[in-house]
Amino acid sequence: MNNITAVKGFKDILPEEAHHWHQVERIVRGVFADFGFQEIHVPILEKTELFTKGIGDTTDIVEKEMYTFRDRGEDSLTLRPEATSSILRAYIEHSMFSRSSVTKLFSIGPMFRRERPQKGRYRQFHQIDVEVLGAEEPQADAELILMLVHLFKMVGLENLSLDINSLGCPECRLIFRQKVIDFLQDTHDSLCPDCQRLLVNNPLRVFDCKNDSCRRLIQDAPSILDFICEGCRCHFNQVRTCLDMFGMPYNLNTRMVRGLDYYTRTTFEITVPHMGSQNAVVGGGRYDGLIRDLGGPDIPGIGFAIGFERLMSLLQDRQESPPPPVLFIAALGSEAQAAAFKLCNRLRLEGIRVEMDYAGKSLKSQMKKADKSGSLYTLILGEREIQAGEGELRDMGSSKQRTVPLDNLKSHIVQ
Ligand code: HAM
Image (tube, rainbow, N blue to C red; front, side, top):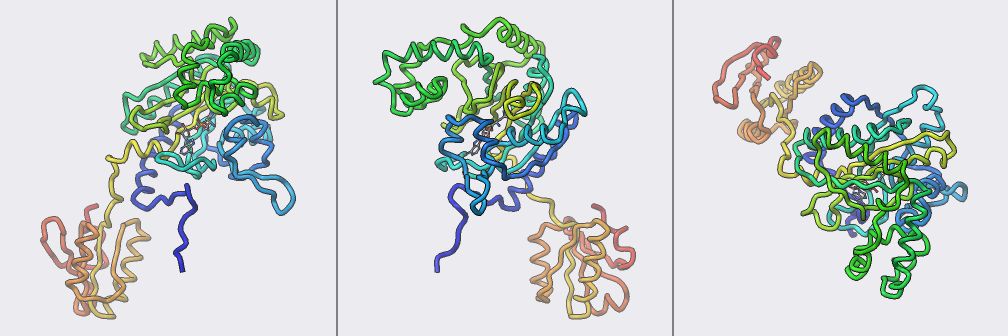
């Protein structure tokens, strides 16, 4: 019989890796708390229309990548491809806007996109997602980017490339959209079939095409910043002034359009040059009309999502092993084994990391196991020691051994 393996593009996170994820998550949570963010848990499954409305039905995600199914012939449901839509749905559903004028939320969890799996691209991946709801001011954009860059610094990553752009508001984008169509009209037949289709449905997405000949064609296309309205220009200039105030370097990338349709005004990405085509570690931006489009009040919003797998791949060489046990108990004989079992679990309940071997092997074999576990101490228990209420405590670093009373063992262990 063939072994059953994980689904293509779905990946196990083994204990050593999970431990490292946990360490990074602790730092991330600390930074979020400093900046006033609160955690929200939203379901993995949502009604499909949430994403078609939110992300946009001419995006790659909605057209090709969603895991959508009928729930036993009833509602059409989708495994969430991103967290923003779900968080906004919850924000509207629970009238969270009535509790506070600005709401800062974060969520960490799995997302699902049926993309072609490759290095750094999975069908189940994890995001660290952050949303600020209710703040229209450019300071909010700059503060969010500042927190993001600070967070990367705190986990040990500096000198990453931050790209920013403004996509304007729906009014000025409409003008730019037409300019792009006009510009590419004459070269229509030289575009790849995907871009030809995009030119009709979603022209700005042509800027994201990886095809060399399309890239050459769009090189001289107009820049969105030449067409954004006075309000959007002023907002973007203020974001940039704030970033300068923080001394934060960035690239102005007027070709960055992002793959989701809800963005307005400020957008940003953090990329890592040597990561190949899947080089975006973070993507985010402002989505001022989205809460209204999803049926809520007209409240602005901005956020970002970090790809957790991609972040961890940058930190691979800093992986630390999980902490070893403090104590390993080696017991000889059935009576000593029973006493060891009791002692081992009593100490665990008192908050000490203890391991033992239940197989009743030779002392040599148990000592080998203790050594391999990396424990700081080994306690050797035989029938004689049990009778005396004592054990032989060996300091694994210095190899020094002494007899200690079992009822006061804790005081002899320096953690
Ligand atoms: P996104 O750019 O689609 O934005 O995804 C954000 C990040 O998730 C990417 O930069 C990447 O690191 C990671 N990611 C995306 N797809 C995959 C994949 N197949 N495998 C591994 N990692 C992946 C959003 O999802 C928006 N909701 C971000 C946002 C929040 N905008 C405003 N608020």
